[in-house]
Image (cartoon, rainbow, N blue to C red; front, side, top):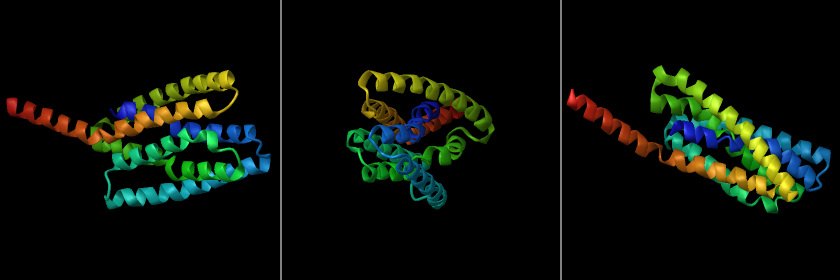
Length: 191
């Protein structure tokens, strides 16, 4: 479950990678495109600090926080066709900055909560290998979609699909946790 969610959440990384290319394709100048990246980076920094603080308060489960973030980005990517000028691209940059770092920020904590500290090293190594392979494959898919359509709308729809799957998997985390706890209690009772 954690591996699947982390695999598909790499879509959040891909928005940052292809946002500048989409901006240039839409006719934005180099300084405007650089401004998008700067705003995205600044909002990302503020978001990571505040998200860690909010996670420590415990208002929402961490998996739900990541799920909401991935869901917001998935919806934003569905509107990629409408990001055509500097103002609308700035909205995408701000959304990416605010919500794009959620998985990075909370991944280790979620893995510890779900798998335990004793399994963290193995879980991180496996998830990093799978995410790296997913990103590599996604670049090929996105490149093919861009070449086939001549625009960046279809690649952003692909990213949206990845983020939607990730969001839904993160939402099911409490269900899987309860099922695992039930199985562990049955094993203990059987012994």
